[in-house]
Image (cartoon, rainbow over all chains, first blue to last red; front, top):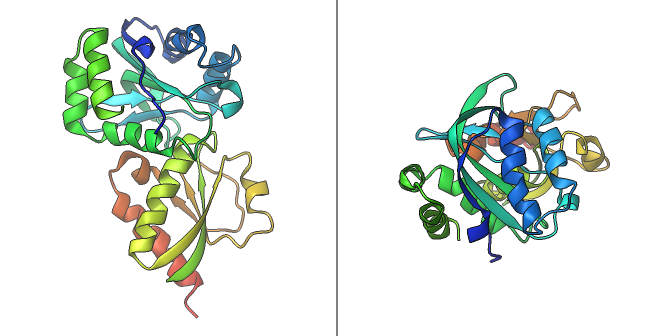
Length: 152
Length: 100
C-alpha cells in the first residue's frame, strides 16, 4: 500500500483562530513538500464551507478536510494536533458543531488505490487506544510514532 | 446472491463515499446481496445515476434533491457507530424493491 504518513506532515500546537485558519496552517505542510498544487488549500477551504468534514467520536472530535483529486500531486495524510479545539461543522448534520482537537487532512490521488489508507484513517478514529495515544503524544516525533503505528 | 445497485454520496465523491462503499459492499455480501457500487458527490449524483437502475442512495453528506430513489443516511458507516442500522435500512429498501 502507498505510504500515507510522513514525518514532515506532522504538526503539533497549531494555534488556529477558526477552521479556515487551521486548514490554511496545516495545508501549508502539503504545499511546502510538494504533495499538492497551489490551488489545494483554497479548494479545501471552499469545500469545507459546503461539505464539512467534522466528526465526533466517543473519545475525540476531529476534522478530515480534503478536496478533489485535481489539486493533488502525491498522496499523503497530515496529522495535526491543535493547541486548542476549533469549531468545525459536522459532516453529516448541517448546523451541528464539533470541537475538533485534531486535523487529519488528506491528499488523495486515486481513491481506488488509496482505499486501504482511507480505511485505516477512518478506522483509527474508531480505535480508542489509538486516539488515546494521539491525545497523550506531545511532540511531533511522538505523534509521528503513533501515526506510523496505526496508519502506516 | 441477489443483485443490487447502490450509490454512495459524499462531499467530494472521493474519500468518504469510497470508504463507505467498500464497507457496504462487504456487509451486503454477508447478507446475500451482490452490490454494484457507484460513488458520487451531491453535484455529480444526477449524472451518475442517469441511465442506471439504482436501488438506493446512501448519503454521507446531506442530499436534498428528490431523485425518486430511496435515500438512507450513511453517517453510521463513517463513524462506525450504527453500522448495523445503516445496513438494515439499506436491506429494507432492497427487499421492498426486489420482493417479487
